[in-house]
Length: 94
Image (tube, rainbow, N blue to C red; front, side, top):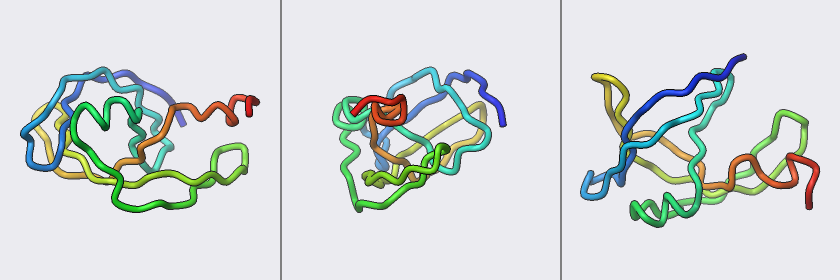
């Protein structure tokens, strides 16, 4: 597993609100995680609540939604998790 930084575009599914952002990509992650403030600014609303298992084995509840994303010449609508990243309890906080 590794990390890499890339520039990309993220927005709501109808692309009426988009923003270029720097992504920190974890090559071992299953979902893209976006900050709740960014989700709110772009009009990306939670669609469901799911349970996730973190790398350290703990389980957390998280909001699942859909977002438009574009990297280089590829784009589409993808599932995203709306969550403070990394979660404070993942770092040993409460």
